[in-house]
Length: 486
Image 1 (cartoon, rainbow, N blue to C red):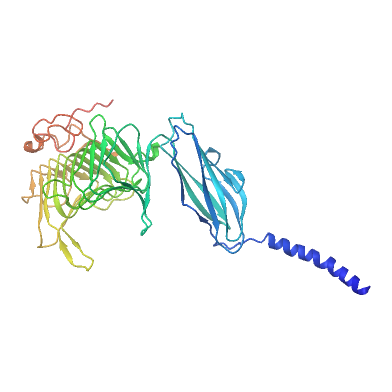
Image 2 (cartoon, helix red, strand yellow; image 1 turned 90 degrees about the horizontal axis):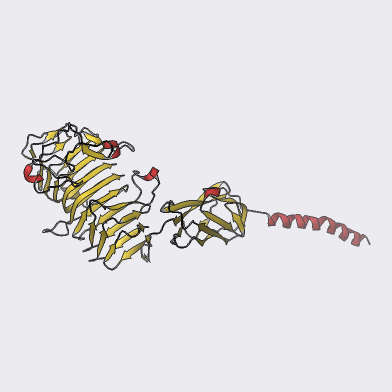
C-alpha cells in the first residue's frame, strides 16, 4: 500500500513537471541576436503588363537554416496601407503581421499580391516597395518591384553558369519604336555583329544599376529628331528623380564594337553616359554623335578609352567627376560642343576635361597609347572649378596631339602655344541658367560671333535647329533673344 501511495505521489509531482518541461520545449525559440533568415530571392519582380491585367501574385520562400525554431517578431510592407502590395505570411494576411514561427531547418511561404488600377494613367512607370522582417532585433528586407504602366520589359533571359551573372541577350537585329517605353532590368547585351536601332521619340528606361552593353561588331543606332528626340534615363519618373544622377549604370560600347551613331538624344541621370572602349575602325568613327544632350551623370558623361569619336552640337553637363574623360589615347573631334559642369551634389574635385596617352599594365610597366588627335573647335569648356582641363601625358614618350580652335575655356594653362588658336580664357560664357541645365547664351556672352567660320559653315544649324550666322557662336547653341515665356 505504501508503495502504491509513493507511486501515486510521484505521478502527481512528475506529470505536471513533465508537462511543464514539454511545454517549455514547445515554446523554446533561438534568441541569438546574430541570427538571420535566408530568402529564395533578394528582389521579387512582377513583370505583368498592368494596363491589361490588374493584379498578379508571386511567392517568396523564407528559410530558417538553423537547428532551433525561430520566431519572426514582425513582417511588414514599407508603405503600409498605401502600398500597392499585400502579403500573406504562413496563412496570415495583411501588410503588418506579427509572431510568425519557422521550425528548425524549415521554411515558410510569403505570398505577395500587387493590384494596380489598369485605367489609372498617372501611375509611376515602376512601383517599388519592401517586405521587412524583424527577428531577434535584426532587420532584413526583400525588394518588391512591379511595373505600373504598359511597356516593353527587357529583363534577364540567361544566367551564365560560370559567373552566375544574369543578363538579357539580344541575339538578332532589333528596332525599338516609340509605341511603348522600354524598361531595362539588369544587364542588356547586344550580341556580336547585331544592331540595336532606336527610332525617333522612343523612351528607354534603365532600372537601378542596369546597363546596355554592345559586344564585338555590335552597333547602336539612335535616330531621334529635333521634334521627337530619343530619351534614355532611369525608370523613376517622379519629380524628385527628374535630375538625380546615378540612377542606372552605363551605355558601354566595348572593344571592337563599331559604327555607333547617335542623333538627337537626351541621355540623363546615370553613372556613365557613354563608355566607348577602343577603336572599332581606323577609317570610320567608333561613335558619331550629334545634337545630343548628356547630363546629370554621377561619374562621367563621355568615357572614351583609345577610341575614335566625332561629336558635334553636343552638350555634356553636370557630371560628378568628368564631363569628358579621354584615356589611353585615341582620335577625337569635337565641334560646336558645350561642356559645362556645375555639379552640385557633393563636391567635384576633378576637372571636366581629362586627356591621357598611357597606362600601366598588370606588371606595372608603362604602355603608351598615342593621343593621335584631339581637336576642339568652336566649343565651350567651362565650369565651377578654376581649372577645367587636365593633361596627363607621359613625359618625352608617345604622341599627344591636341588643338583648341576658337574655344572658350576655363583653365590655368598657358594658351600662348600653337595648340591654342583664338581661345577665350576664363571669361564666363553667360549661360541663361546653368542651375536648370539651360545653356542658351545671354546677349552679353563673349561666345557670340567668336567662332571659326570654317567650322560653323560645316554645321549650319545648332542643336535647337537655329541657323548659324557666320562666323557663328561658340558652343552648341547659337545666340537668339530669349523669350522668358518659352
